[in-house]
Length: 213
Image (cartoon, rainbow, N blue to C red; front, side, top):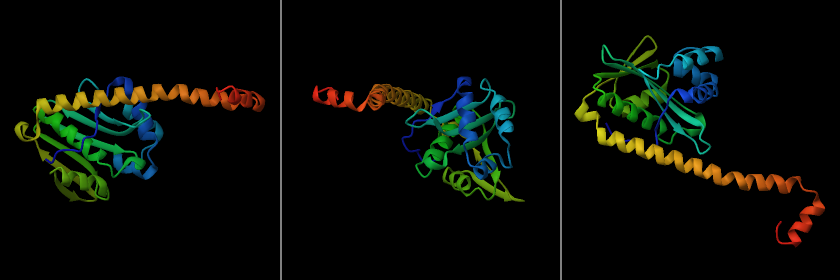
């Protein structure tokens, strides 16, 4: 499997449920249909997110500059059969940047390190983006009756790497810290602009003359 672009992929936890729901609910109607394979109402999306088992499954995400989720991967794990099912979604405004592939690569890496034998994705055959990502990642795609089943036989030596996953986690941590710091530094400037905007025009002119405008 080709190495993913250097995209920070975060491990998500139960505290991110509302963020995950917000990401999925903001997807256009057709994108949501392609993600779940059928039309899904808002309530069903929330029930799906509420039902994610973070103790068993893994959820990965990509954060935007404002720390909102712009991409999510849900890796549903079957510890008995050693099968891992993957679902991926990326915000339309953030596509064609390698985010979908980064989420897929991160999920393969994690499943392989856990010793899972097979990872698969089931999607509509018309979902060209996921079909392209699956083939790029080396998954075997079989299309039948309008549905596509993409599978990858996992090998810990070929697809895994504990050191690589540790680096990925560290990179994600640093990325989050930098984005948090940027937002924190930007807040005083935004507050200052709002304060100046609310001042009477005469006061703003006095401030400017005094060198504080």
